Image (tube, rainbow, N blue to C red; front, side, top):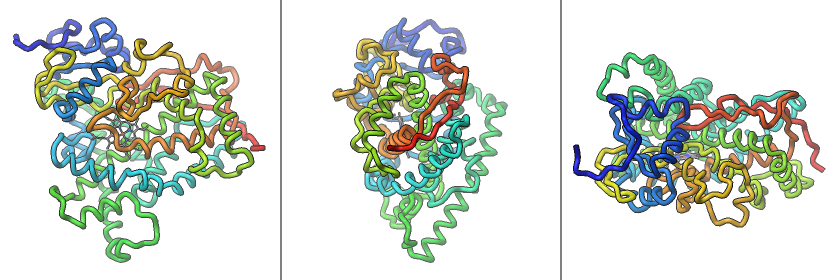
Length: 473
Ligand code: HEM
C-alpha cells in the first residue's frame, strides 16, 4: 500500500507481475498493444522490476525534456556489469560527473562532425569493395544482411583502430549476444534478487567466453597503439583513429576522472554496439521496404541516377543534394526504430509525469516505436510513405517527440552523424549501381517482416536479393 498516485496498468500476477503479457511479441509491440488498452502511461511489474512505460509523444516530452535530469540514470543489467567494465562506458554509465566527462569527450573528440568527416576515405574504400562484390554477384542471390553488417563493421573497426581486427567474427557474435542479453528482459535481470538465475544460465558462460577473447584482443590493440605512440610520437602519417584520440586524452591527463585502459575498452564496446547493427539494420530495413514498395524504389533510384548522371565514382559530398532518399531513411527509422525502447532510464528524483507519481528507482521506458506510429500524430501510421517527410520540419534531432529514433535530452545518442552518413552513402550507391529483385517465386508482399527480440530490432529472416548491374548512362 502506498500513498503515491502511481500510473494505472494491467493487472499483475504474483511473482511474475506482467511478464506473461509480453509473451509472443517483441516488447515494443506488446507494450504498444497494452498502452492502447491502459493508456499512454502505465505501471508494469516485470518480475521484481517496477517499470513505467510511456507511449505518447506528449508524455515522452514530459519525461525526456521536463524531467530529463530526474530520469537521467540508466538501469544496470548483469550483462552490462560484466562486459562494460563496471558500466564505465557512456551509454550505461550512471548519471554523474564521470558520465558527463566521457560524454563530452565523445561529442567533442570522438564523434564530432569533423572527426566523422575525416573517416570519409574509409567509408568510400569499404563501399568500393562492396560494389565490386555485388558486381561479381550480379544475377546471383546475395545475403544482404551478412554483406552489409560485415562492411559496416569493417568501417567501425578501421575508424576505431586503424585496421581490421583478427577476431571480427567473434566481435560480431559478441555484439549479437550483447544486444540479446542486455535488453533488460533477460530472466536474470527481471529477478535480480534471485542471483542463482544468473549463474545457472548458460548465456553467462557463453558471454564470458566471448568477452574474455575480446578483452585480450583489446589488450593487444592497446599495447600495439601505445608502442606506436612511443616510436613515432603520435605522428604516423595516417588519419588519427579513435583509439589514438582516446590515448591522447588519457596521456594528456588533467581530467577529473583519469581514464584507464578498462574505461577505453568499455567505450569501444559502446562504439561497436552503437555503430554496427543500428546502421546495418537500418540499411536492411530500408531495402526491404523498397523491395516491398517498387514505386518508392524507382523514385529513389531515379533521384540518385539523375543526381549522379555520368559519374563513375560517388563521393560523400555528392550525396548532400539528395532529398527523397533522406525521406526514405526517415520513414525507415519511423517504422523500424532500431532501439524502439531507446535505452531505458531510471528515476533518480521523484517526479510527476501525466499527473502520476514516479518514485525513485523506478525503471522508465519510453516507447519510441509507439510514438512514431501514434495515429494521433501520423496519418496512415502503419504505411510506408516517405513522402510524409517532404517539406516537413519533423526531424530526429530530439525535439519532435513523435519521432525520436536517437532519443532526446541529455542521454541522447552522440553517434547520429557517424551512423547516418554510412546509411545514406550505402543506400545511394546500392541504388545507383544496381537494380534489385527477389528470387523467383517470392512475392514482395510475402516477405517475412518478423522482428527478432533483441534491444536492437533486426529482421528475423535475413534479406536476400538479386542485384543486376546497372550501367550508369
Ligand atoms: C542509426 C544509428 C543509431 C541509432 C538509431 C542510435 C540510437 C540511440 C538511442 C535511441 C540511444 C539512447 C538515447 C536516449 O536514451 O535518449 C543512443 C545512445 C547512444 N548511442 Fe546511438 N544510435 C545510433 C548510432 C550510434 C553510433 C554510430 C554510435 C557510436 C559510434 C552511438 C553511440 C551511442 C552512445 C555512446 C549512446 C549513449 C549516450 C548516453 O547515454 O549519454 N550510436 N543511441
